[in-house]
Length: 496
Image (cartoon, rainbow, N blue to C red; front, side, top):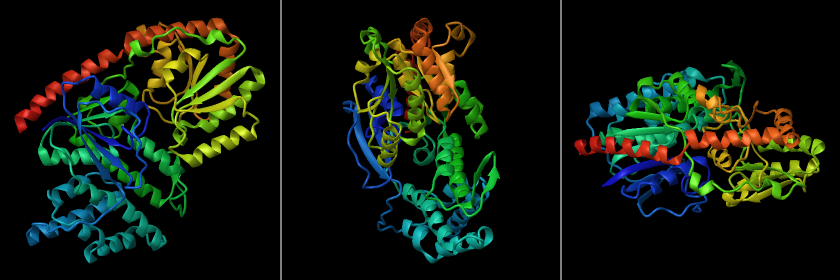
């Protein structure tokens, strides 16, 4: 039996980034424990290329496909009463997603039982499932095209049906790093085994999916309606309600919930999490790996700006490129290096390349692809993030070790990292600038100020060095999780 199973949706070990680096560090730092990974991917066509050398104590790997539904022969054991209860639970769940009622997802699992009392084929293709779909359409969306409703209903429900039958390795403790589909499968592991479930949220998954859904152009919008300052139609609301329901389920099923900073805790409580379950465990950085002399003075002819991360929409690289145009007009010797993978969203990368060319920045904005960032940080005069959503970015902490000030949008824990959290932390001073999301002018103004005021840059550089050593040491984070794993593994042993 495994000690810990981690549930990873589209991250480790095939996608590089802050969450994946955190997972890799966690496993690598505890060689005495046997880990397993349940990796959730969209389907069999998902491109898989390892981004990490897998630690020897990662002894089991299971891939689960979210949207690639394949029927397998099933013969559910049930009484007529259990079958009717299962169909009623499925219909109540569908109505709950439409109406925004989260309790129905709990009723669904109680009604379906385990193993499920309805087969995947029945839930997806039977006359009873078709009747449920028709009733929900006529009740709530007769004004919509039935084809649009049908495909939305199917794409919302099919992953749920698929995951109900997914294989889950046995472990003493289950640990998911998001809610959503990953949190659903982790919750099923808890329901099936009765063993502890832990949740660590770096960013708030439901918020990130909401942003993506509101902006998505693949979901038909029949008529816009206001909702909390956002505008979206009926079909988008179905997707948002689904992920909110999955979030509620995971919060309810988790024995403990960990987050990176106080602002995230507030959002989790607002989204339905029990505040008594939540603990704050900041990210930590390996100071020994990144501690090297700052070299930005080796090329005084260039003000070197670095972006470290994936070139994807949530990082809002297009806004950064616009900021670079403003910067080079004021600081002609500035150059920006986009350091990180470009293959996750090739269409978005092409948009970024086109903008660089359109703005005449081909010799001023350089896409390097994946690099050894430990070699790059010391060369930078400034790190910049223009993300529209973050948790607690490791790249900022890593850059601080090397004495690099940062300009970042006011998302996630970025403000707390740059300006300080508690009073003693704030007294260290600012380690960079905080800007508003989607504002190339604010981002550019902060970078120009750093370029023109070396004394300010030196003060921010020293504040960052002190802050990361005092509050964000990797050893402290690992010790916290090590103790938590030991505690909950003992609970897991008692339940075996």
